[in-house]
Image (cartoon, one colour):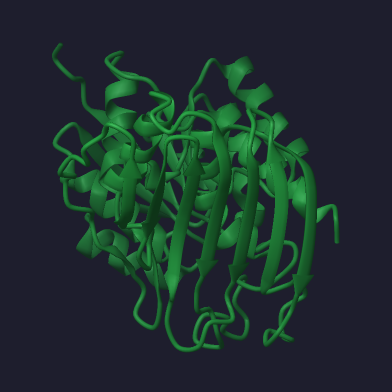
Length: 337
């Protein structure tokens, strides 16, 4: 099938918005046509470095009648849902960074609008493309471990004053939402994608050294999987200086697996009955934001998936219902505060 070129715009031109723009430009079947941001200091970068039109808001952009197929939402978390709805109302597809919204109700409104407009909503959960994550998904889908007894997820990261800069949206209740939304929703997604929904949730929260934020920096969450087995999710952004690990350990009837490393990028242990570990493809490096690092830089897979899906040769890697489910799980956890 001959792929048709897909025209993109990006709203929110910070670190992650620039990454989206770069990945769009690298895909030969994608074209970046505009950047939208409230910061007019970015106008010169958009026009001179990216050679695209610059707009201060979505209203001005759509009033220009510039042809576009998809708008990528890279704004602060609290704007994701309302930006997505406005884009859908203007008959464009949406690529929305995590989280899809800060409440289940917001996400439902986005889905309702997408159905009305007959447009796709692609949720960015790029860790699904990580070779260890994809491999673990396959192992569980093939039931190679038999019954799942226990799943332990540890996410121990550094986010300090270098990250929570004064005047930034990060660390605010209405635009950030909390560390499960901003830092660790990728790993909630991986857990849900591989093992399914959870029930019987219990949680404890603590703010150890982020008194300047209105929410916790650490938590211990226990639960049961609806499909069977116990789970534990432990997280913290109080690690000194740099990230420690993001790991998932699975104990099953027929073996045990641990995927670890700083970014869930290494298979550290695999001992499974009648199974030989295959050679996995190398993982991409983490996103580098200077003083701190984030999840793997897999955004080119997202753009490729959007292009292929809109050309009818693929399906959304993370659809809107899955994006909603991640938000709903986080909302249920936070309801225990």
